[in-house]
Picture 1 (cartoon, rainbow, N blue to C red):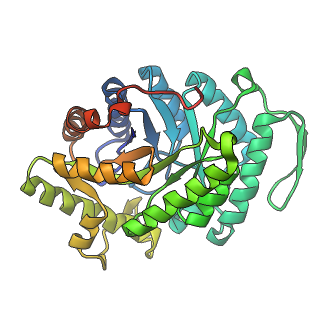
Picture 2 (cartoon, rainbow, N blue to C red):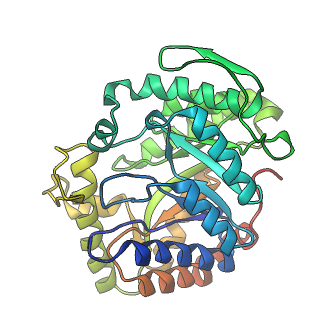
Picture 3 (cartoon, one colour):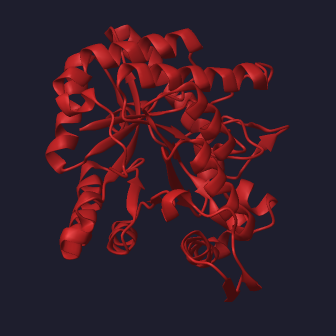
Amino acid sequence: MKFNHFLSAYYPDTQYGAKRFFDDMVAQAVLADSLGYRAVSIPEHHGINILLTPSPLQMAVKIAAETSNVEIATSIAVLPIRDMRIFAGEVIQADCLCDGRLVLGVGRGAFKYEIERMGVAMQETRDKFDESLEVLQALLTQQEVSWDGDYYKFDSLTVMPRPMNQQPPQIMIAAMAPEAIYHCARRGFHIQTAPLAGNHQLLLDQVAAFQRAKNELGAAGEHLRLSVLRTMWLTQSATDSANKMLQVEDYYKRFDNVFSGPGEVHNGAIAALPRQQSIEDLELNMMVCNRNEMIDKIGLYQEAGIEEIILSSAIDCPQQEVLEMMQRFAQEIMPHFSETKTATNMRD
């Protein structure tokens, strides 16, 4: 089992300051590197104050300059709002500056509020993502690429410079539906998923879909990995757990607003709207618990065949509290899953 720290890009107090906010993310990455986390993940969102990182590749380069071992994953770069002819060159440059530690996580985008303000209809994102991914792969791996599709039409061009050692970063696709996971893995992509509010059976179905594709690929799929994103906080008492769940609920009042709700946003701040799910039901889907419970929950993930958990602590807690919790997790939890003691590069 490997552990990946999802950088806490949550900005409920919009007066906190952008410089301080991004410095906090870098400090978390530096600590993760020193504690033996396998990777850090960088979100991407625009115009809203949750999961806020307008340029994950810029953040990846900054983190690479401050760390030595961790993989640095975009989680995820939204393809439909970009021009792949520009993005391909940016990916190559970022990978070079990250010394090959970049993992390019990509997806279609999740928030209608955000996507449509970037000029893309939400109902088109699946088709546009599929074509964008094909264009991106071609530009990263071939020279003199031309295209005549539904969303891209261009004459022959070669993205320069070319990838290091002619090997672009490996791609991880964000997918949630089991069949989507199967088809993406079957094409040779690493997978990032999240059961969100789904029950444990959905998680098992997601894992089964990935394993089915990996088994069908045989030796060609042995290197593929499945990463699962979970909200996590290692608590120190029952009172601490209860308080952290209140903060988790407040976060999801905003998340749901832009994920499945009306998209009520004022000056970049997402309104915290009432949720239908009780806090007790929400807690069942979270990893907000003490040491023994955390070990048991992670053990279930390991038994299910999950190789990496992306741990998101993006709730409204002071930076020092986040860093202290990361330290406790490394000391109290990671030793029970000994493979986490050393970071390995996905390309090894």
